[in-house]
Length: 466
Image 1 (cartoon, helix red, strand yellow):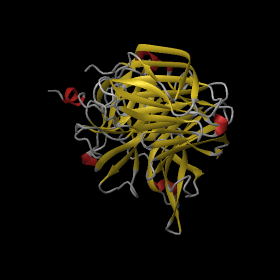
Image 2 (cartoon, rainbow, N blue to C red):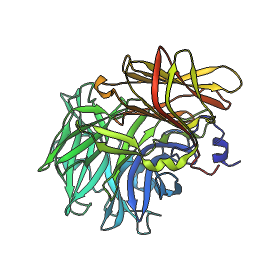
Image 3 (cartoon, one colour):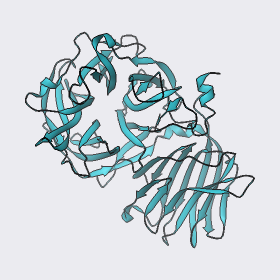
């Protein structure tokens, strides 16, 4: 039996989230739009379901929904001492697809010996050639400034000038670690100049002590920029919106990008239309060995009126919808359950729109068709302003709960759950359902009664031919 067929039997393996046919996946890398197709790369161990032997996997799509796996893009060049091809970026340099990534080897470890390498493609991204002048950057570029855990380039072009950010940390008095994002410039992607420290964290609990996978992009104006960093080893993602002028970045308040504990190392891209798209890495495997990890659904990022990000699943995902149930203007009290008929699996999309007149709470449950066993997997608690999903919790600012209309948007894909509230809060989690047979989706109000404006649910089809 093919490995992919065997793995598809795993009740925890997602059906409509992106993942390789088998084995390990972590950070998404260098998403790019090229010749009317989306290309997505990712950190990948093609020989096992644990971290190690890191290559760049590769896939493409015409619609952000259905993906075609392509040959591996980057392999470690063992003869040149390369052990891993860490994360990086992909750009078009005079319309030539070009990857810049962090190279790690036995003699140049990831803490103090990382290098930045370049590869390019001349056959429409089918195969890749590593540049003869590699490494294009070494730690010597910083002069007397010592950087640890230097990695994960993110590049963009302004006019005729290329810019790039990388991350890591600096050390003060040998003990205090402060996370850092560094800024560089180049005219040709080969010869780089270190400009300055773009952003320095304070080493606090909020900013952490080391940053990875920086994303730096414009939003809502020429001078407004978003900086996203992944905080290691805490495995959380934070962002700030600030101003960019004369190669200076003044950051604003830091926010959590995702309130769960399962999403990390996101990568962004800007479409020709200007839309900003993002994917993140979701940890973990399932019951059957042979796979480990997947990516989030593609998300669109926009700016809110209060200098935060609005985050929503891309509209293209609607083509995955199949059976549909629509309920309107219904009241549910604590003595009853609303069963969403005809939705009898754990690959579901659900949109719940409700008012907030009494500070009630409601739950999403699954129940087996034959028995009365019920399993609560998500609670929206309007009294304490929290969303609880599995073991993860998202605290909501009371000002973000509206009196007239709120929207909870939930994607369930076997053990992977993504929750969006009013496009401001995201929570990505893993929940390993005990219920195995076909099940019914239910909504229950814990205390009192609650009026729901609309409830829409869809069963979701797989994006793979299984």
